[in-house]
Image (cartoon, rainbow, N blue to C red; front, side, top):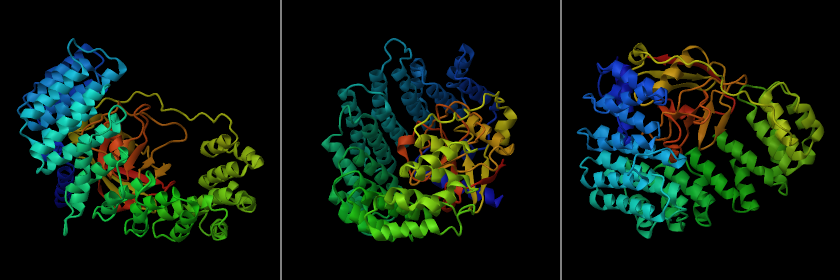
Length: 592
């Protein structure tokens, strides 16, 4: 019981930090109206395809139970039909702030239907939705709702610069009126970041917006003795927006590289790599205590000339973090004129002491591909060894190396490999059609039951990864019920046992769950208000809906409202950083 209480307290702190709605199972016991909520879950899972489904959702928005009303409003938004907007916008006047915040988010999600030409009632347009959200902002007295409204105003699918200008002015006016409130400032930051990311081509951010974003970083990081607070998410979002607006300079990067938050420092190095400024801060990044910053600093150096890049990569080969060391190997591929670099790659390729171990093949594989780029004439024997290895990842990397080196004979052999991933790497090198990848299996997915909702009212998932350890997820049944129930059923059936993390994109995501024989399917996306922050767990493909999931390794605001978030890492966050491509899931245990 003490452990469960501690877990609930930990996730409650995460919710407060992220300024998102607290899941119902944290706030109170399961409500008595399970049947009504089950009807909502089922109607949403059907995509509200029938008039009965739509009637259930519309009527449930008027429920006396706040959580039922909130679920119904959210479901109406997720079906992305502008025809539902009158019902959604009505809930902006709900007596409870959590329902009003959900209505703001649902309005922005529903309005996405305008992009696909879905019908809307007479008088309902993007401009009328914007006007309704702005009107609510002018009278809203709850900071969390104002924050949701700011982001919703930014997310509408605008088509004119005037609409974008109105949205930006509205968001900045919130900062003028409520600027001392951290929740409001976070809402402004989320709104401006979304506005820049989605609409800067229509209308670039104004000087007033740029000034607010800069001040959020420079003035805050310059304050002596500053403690790490919620403000770190504001600074991250502000820097993301400034990078997107191409509005970074030396002073800004110099301030950000000394920020107490590692993700802000990482973004400083990302800004260097995508701009023409800030190179003076790179040495600090390369020596940073946190691997995600060192990794981004290495990438930034790569864009600024071969000599410095090769020197930095050589020094990083012995980095204590495997991901950084592997990136250093990758970057030596352009250092063929540097004898020390070629020699280092040859040593790495020749050292096969751990090449056939479960987690030992990475250095050999990355060095082989890099050597193929730097000195293709020197990879012969090493390529033969890797191409005949019993480890499929080594064979796949051998195919990539053969393609770079132009070894047609080796590619022909590997194109016939029994593993589709190896064969397709070789076929790509030969510029031939790939073997078809099995799509998600067509199957009848059992509908959730009231018993499911009761059993999984506040579940956790214990994910055991071979040679890495155990990571614990808090599952959001209230936020993404169909996804959580599907994940739980698959996990309990052993579906994920033995599958691997096939894709690890450093400083982005670690993705797992692909089956060579074809994936199973998930329900429709259940996008919501929980952001894609570090440690969020999402479903990877909103279009195909297959059973691959991913863990956000850093904050990824560009994924918000696109990919379902159904869990958050609760314990073992430090282990997530050590996941490598090919790591094996031994088991996933659901703890109701």
